[in-house]
Every structure is written in structure tokens, then in C-alpha cells.
Image 1: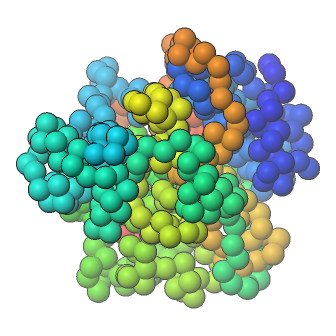
Image 2 (image 1 turned 180 degrees about the vertical axis):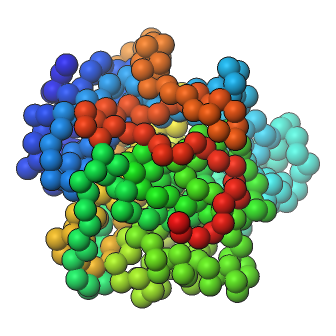
Length: 458
């Protein structure tokens, strides 16, 4: 066991948690893992440990907390470890001509993200080419990087120039993001303190969580709340494109319902769920749900003690705050891809650290907001972003000679794998790297298909 973790100590300081009893937290295998210059294991382990500490603050009791740093690192691509009835779940990164790095006319690399049909078709329309890698490369080579990035953004689509971290911090959006806290808590309303009991092994059992999220950070946040005992209702449109492995891996412990917000009936149902709920988590394009009466301010009027959680790509301040984005774009724009591969050939890292870490931070943010609400009352907003997480990871320093660092061994993964029987047969999946002696992380129900339940509380 090793208690000394500089990343953890610094995170406690940054989040104002140095007063907590850190001596009960132990870290194992606190060494670099994966061929990447970033301390993803120590970072993930630190956030998970703070989740356990905040859970203890809520329940008023202390317990031993252990996190294996190699397991925590592995958790940042947990989706790849799934098995169904003894077979590895077929999973591949999106391999589309519109999802990759391309070289522009001014010799800059730009990452296009067309991982969904609307995004793909929009990029192909701008480039005026068919869905061919060769033709896309030819077309991108005719554009200057800045012009293409802006043109794609103005169309509501996804692309990012591969910048160094220094370039990112000098960019107006990078400056805005770097000045944001890692987790921002904002009070929305004044209301009486909210008293809940957190004295059972399923600590968050009193909590009702509305989950309006999609891959990966958002549903990871609500997955963590479900492991702590919260009643989580995941809501989605039946017409949205899906990536099945991600949906299944992040839906353990949740009920899943369809809801169509474009209808008056759907909007009325959503408002009633907000009225009777406690936490609302969303990770869609900023502003996408506001047009349906689900802005933070409107929800706080419906429910003066709601906690809203917003996860986005580019941060919650600055001119880029409303741009849609994904893990790959956060790595590209903030300097991670350049650090991983070099200026002349940026490369994405071996895991999805910004998605999973942002999800972990959002879970932690909910626990922090619950404590503030218990003491101060009010509705609260929690903001987390992929680019702020990516900026933080790079602020932790760079690991030398990272190319020779091996992935975690099988034991680091096996200790976190569990099995369950459900509608998908026997699923074996990565549970959690957070070990709590008295309130273990566990799900109350197996992963369910999307739309398996009604859009109602139970």
C-alpha cells in the first residue's frame, strides 16, 4: 500500500478538500502505465478516491478506501473489456474516412470527426467529395487549416486543428478553459437545505437521477451514481444512432426509457420527471435541451432543489463553448495528440482519458453539490468539460520514455471484472477500480436494452 500520491494531494488542494481525512486512502501500483506521456492512472485513481471520500462525508462515517492505479488507468477504456456469454464483445474504434487526421494546404494536421451519419454527411458536403479516404485527403489538402476548422464549426460539425499545448494555452478558448475550475459549482436558486439520509450500504439510494446523456463521459458519470445506489433513469430518443458496446457498458444499474422531446407529451413528461427528481445530467450539444424547456434555469424553476450537471467538450466559457465535440477532438486541440505522436504526426492516446475522467469528475461534482445543498440549500449546477480535463492532465507533467511503458497486466483488469445475468445473457464487464470497505461499488440491476422501461419514476 502507498498513500503518497502527488496528483491526489494536488487535486485535494485544487478542489478545497485538504481538510478531509486522507490518511484512510491507499493507492497500489502507483507507477506509470500505458505508452503515453500522461499520468492517467494516478489521475483517475485520485478522482475515484475523492469520490469515496465525499461519499463518506455524506454518510457521516469513514471507511478504508483503496484504489489500484493500474486498474484505474485500465478503467479509461473499460468498454473494450466486455464479454458476452464468454465471447469478447466486438468493438472497434470508428474507422470512417471522415474520422481521422488529415494534412491541410498549410501543412497543419486537422482531425475530422464524422462518427455519426449527420456529422459525416455534413463534412462530406463541405468538402464536396464522396465517402472515400483518398478523396477526403485530397479535398482537405486544398484547405488552409484555420479556414476549414471554422467552416466546419460554423456548420455545427466537428473538427479540430492539432495544436501543441503551448498553442492551446495561447488560444482564446484555451485561455478561457484553463481559467475554469476543474469542477465548477454554481448556485441557481435559494431554497431550504435538503436533508436526506445516507446511512445504508447503498449510500445514494434516496437519489433520483435523470440521465440525458450519450457516449462516453455523461453516461459514465451516471453509471458511477448508480454504483453508489442512486435510482438512475436513462432517457434517449429511439431515433438516435447508437454504438452498442458503449450503450451496454454504461447502462448497468439503470432503467432505460425512450422519450421524444419534439412532442408536447414528451416535454410534459420530462418536466414532471424533473419536478420529482433530484439530479439532471446531460451531455448533448450545449443548448440542445434548452429549446425543449430544459435549461438549467428553467429546471430550477420547476424544481428549486434540482442539481443539474453539464458535460461538454470545449468548456463552459469562451466563444467555443457551444461547439459539439468528442474525446478525439479534446486530445487534438489541447496538445495531447501532439505530445503523444509529435508535431509532424499527431496520434491519439491508447485510452479515452478525457471521457472517463470527465465522467468521474462529474460524479464527484454531484457528491460535492449534494453536500453543499445539505448545508446551504438551493439548486446547483455542476460544469465539467473534456478540454478542461485534458488541460489538467497536461498540467500534471510529462512522463519520460513513455513509449516503452507497458499496458496494465491481466491482474489489474481481472480484479475489477464481474459477471451478471440479464437480457444480454451473461455479461462480464469492468466494474470499478474504487474499493470501499463498507459501501462497495455495485449495481442493483443488470444492463438493460434501451427503451426497456417507461419514462416514469418507480
